Image (cartoon, rainbow, N blue to C red; front, side, top):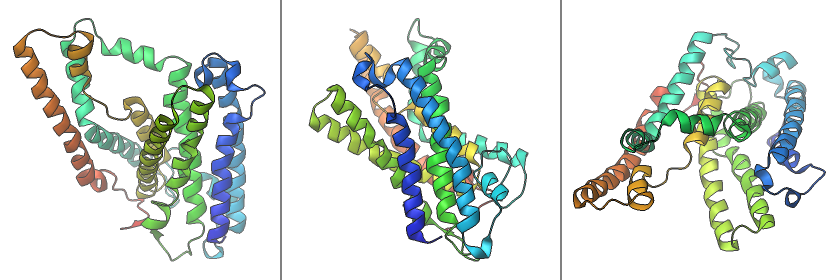
Length: 318
């Protein structure tokens, strides 16, 4: 398989996922809540499931048939290389204990990255009367929107935009050529980032924002989703194909969201403004601490990602 063939096949895989979202008998404007209407969510989940299952057979078959001749793999090996089966590494070794440990270390990496928002959330639920984390967690998770955002989307998107695309490009490398960072880690995530352009289309169709707002929002989203795709690609190869570590990272990042201003400070300055000068000074101090923690989170993640994602199945030449 040539690099051009790999690009075209990757383009097909990426487009097929987005196409499944819009292959519906009714337009979004027919539903009062647009993409968040439960009927729209169910239809899209069904179609995406069919497309992903089809590609889970098609892509391994193409890799086994047209991949590099020097490292030919069987259809069964190509399917297992997708990483859907927990405990299997791309080098053919089964290690469920190490596999679970890698998932935990990947989660801890995100914990370091989000040290600011996590600390803020802890203080918010500790200090704000009547707020309980388990109530908010239940309301956020246990409904069709939680199923889509934190279960279905992470699983299907990681299978498609991490596992399939990485395996396609890895099949173009000769048997004695290790995976190079710039090819797989930095190029293939662009498919994942650009795939989010469909959100601009939905926002424009619904008329919920101005053109400038849509442009800024989508540019920012493409940028950070591309960077996130680089992280999951790196994780996938660094751990020898641990797809469920990538899924765990994806689900956790979806849940925590893009870091915003302090929730605790917002509550006591907007929702329930405090009159005490002493409390106002404490809130100002916390705002500065929160910003410092955001920067520290980036530094922690930068300094620890190689250590936390180290694995016996590492397939990356650094």
